Amino acid sequence: MEQGGFSFDPEWVINAVAAIAAALGAYYLGIRTYFRQKEYELVQKRYIDEGIDRVASEAEEALSVFRHNWSQSLFALKLFRDVGPKLASEHCEKTLLPLEHTSLEVGPVYRLKALVGDDIFWEMHQLLVSSVTEANFFFMRDLGGTLKAGAEGQPLKVTREEAFNTLHQECMRLKQDVEPYYTLVGTLQNISRALEEEKFSFKSIRDFKNTEVVKQAIMELRTEFGDRVAFLESHEDAAKSAENRVTPASTGRPASPSAR
Image (cartoon, rainbow, N blue to C red):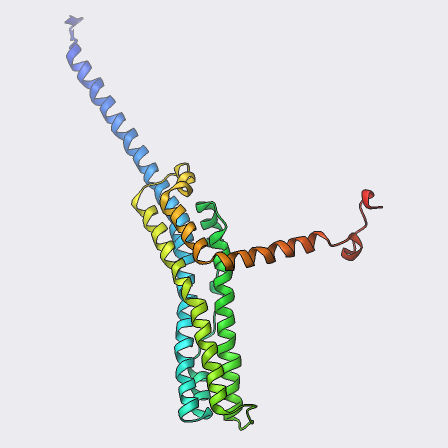
């Protein structure tokens, strides 16, 4: 069709509009895919990199320090029994490692708590820190102190054999106390894998706590550490009750009108 010397081709117009629409559609789809990918990456960073993996890494570090100090303490005890306290004490001073509490962060545990909708990992965090701290105190102060006192010529209150047996028994008790915490590392790795296998948005991640892997992890930890968790919770409840019983007079604040 021609108008005033201009040839109008409807088919060309339709093809042009279709091409423009396709280009706009592809652009929109690309932008949408880009932002979805960025959101997925942010979710991964927040809950895996800055949450689960950090908690697991800190647990592994604490357990690694325990494992190292436990094995070195056993070797020192053998030196103490077979050679004498001097070499044993020197070995402790050279090899025992401190537990760096600055590496045990609270923020990642709270992210994990928000993810799974349960306090169990916060409670496990406290229990692990408590157990490893107790063990490290024994290795460095009690065992190390005993060996150092003997190396300095201070008389022991018991025979060397009795001291060895007592210290060795405590080392074995601490091993039994700490070993179960490797279960914590395993459950964290299972949750991390489940998060990596699916792309979550900030909206869909809210339902992650209802997945089977999370329910299984919580059940496994509460089964393994039920008595310890109950003991911890009872102490926390007692502390809260004591806090609530504090009277205005004891806090230095004026009594409320209802208390007058």
